[in-house]
Length: 268
Image (tube, rainbow, N blue to C red; front, side, top):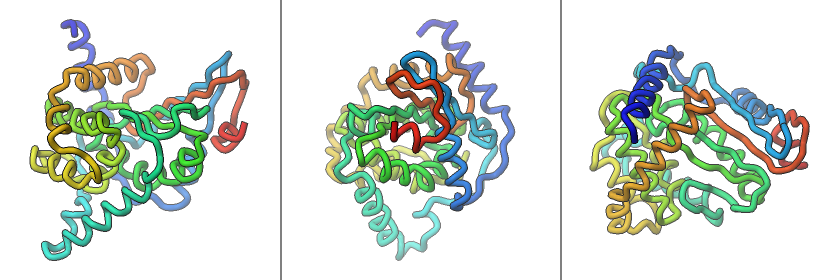
């Protein structure tokens, strides 16, 4: 990467961190419906429909939150049981759905959503745990939608930590287990800015991913292509003017002039 590209990414990172945001709240049914509706508001030109959804209250700065992870919230004696329930929930959600690298869903699905996120972003957690399961069950599992996870640094305070945690997720993707890893990460997400993302934290998550070979996962983390993928994601986000997370780019092949809801898009 050139010095100019480094400076540009540093500037974008600083701009994202200066953006104020409110504290996140739990996602209720009304918010779920609103987010799903927003995700479906798109305009089409020629052969591709692109939508950019920027959540005003999304992660764009490093203001902390006070929400503990699900494991942290349990007493020592109950942690194992809670972890087992979480693991079972993740396994059930993703079981039988094709994964390839950072992509979840049938590679031939007619609709693609690029989901830009930071693993430490609390709003990404809200979307992933509160809204995304509905999309997965209704559309991804039925082969109508595939989702690409893209890295965009917003909430993580330390750039090196951001790279390490995102690479850890991408390394799981080498075994087609990335979505299991990131879903577990969001379930166990700690206090923003607390420094909870350590090597032990990442390895503990990897050990909980069903079917993930730890030796292969560890070796894959040294693959320079994974860092290149993070850099590429940042460049795509910059070119699209994306500065907060969660943010989405949605595309469908075909000549459709206008689609108002995701249901209509996926039905067409």
